[in-house]
Length: 178
Image (cartoon, rainbow, N blue to C red):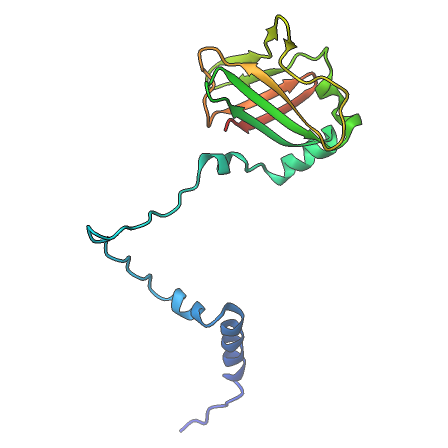
C-alpha cells in the first residue's frame, strides 16, 4: 500500500478555491452545460423580446486609434454623419477641441465633399441663393460643435452606408451614416 502525500494536492485545492472566490459561487454552475431555454410564452401572457443592438449604436463605434488621430492631428472629436428626415440632406458634424488644429475644417476656401464608394457618388455642400453655403465657416472655438449639410438628391446615400468626408487636406474614412 502506497502512502499518499497530502502536500501534493494542496496547491491544486488552493488554486480551485481561489478561482471560485474570484469568479463567484455561480461561476462553477455557469461553466457547466448550457441551460435550456424557457418554453415560449402562453397565448395570454405578454413576453418581452430581447433588446436588439440598434444600427445607431454600431455607427457610433469608432476605433480608439481613429479617435486619437482626429483629436491629435485635427483637434476634433465626435465626428457624426446623419441622414435627415426627408433624406435629401446628409449632415456632418464635429466638435472642436483645438481651434488652431481644426482651422482648416472651417476654411471657406476648402470645398467639402462626402464620398460614398458603394453608391458611387460624391456629394457637395449646396449653395443657397440668400443663405450661402450650408455650412459653418466661422473661426473655430474650443468646445463648440460645427456642422455642414451635403445635398443628397436622389437619396443615393442611405443610413448604414460607410462614407468618407473630405475638407481640404482633412479626410475622415469609414464614417457610418446614422
